[in-house]
Length: 346
Image (cartoon, rainbow, N blue to C red; front, side, top):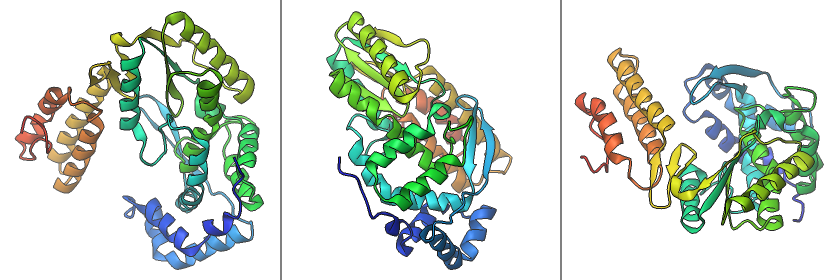
């Protein structure tokens, strides 16, 4: 693939920075850091453009916090100025990353996403009798900076942009030269890009008939268990040798007819359900919405917005979970908010 150049001027372009600010502030304008940046917007964007143009941009401090849903995870969030920068870089560089990725990887991509990945996985489940499900051990914390920077250097030729990539990547490490922060927009794109070589190895080197990847969760389909066991070993060798990554110790091989847990769903050749963990999370969040609204900490508009987000998550494919979803939402309906639009139970 021809290397992309002359991109940095587009990153600090005034219109690009304004769009980057709008995206970084979306849903966060009431926060103190976003409001302070917006209060002197023109001046702050001009300062940002100047720092990028003269190569003096300094990555700000990160804010760390821990989440526990669906599992314990340390989030390392950038300051607001860096968030604007990350959006500015992504707006310009995303099309270049797109050219590097194959069609069957679904994270951080326009027109893709979780639902598309689930639908693609079910399509392969209808074609092949066996599947191999794999996951990478501590993926974000295991990404090597030198390998990532070398890959970026083979994709981009704008030296100022590569220097900026280097500063962003070096701003966080869990060990010398290792790790990307979970919670950063650029980290998501870098991490997805890092496994692009694996995608091509599986599709072109191993000639896998069915393959879907969503960030570091991926599935390969095949005709028999023994063939997929060989694929598992080859993938493990490739990840260790080429990308310095390790698979989790218990890869899963089973028949597609038995169903497969993937991206919060239980996927069968004939239908898709929310898996047990997703159902528990869904019900727990509905109960939390009830308590917050009853206590006056959540107004009607916020309740509707969050309920709609929950429903969107629950719509994972074929609507075979609608009876369960409708039943859980009845408590909200009893308060006058009504079941979700389009539910068969309306």
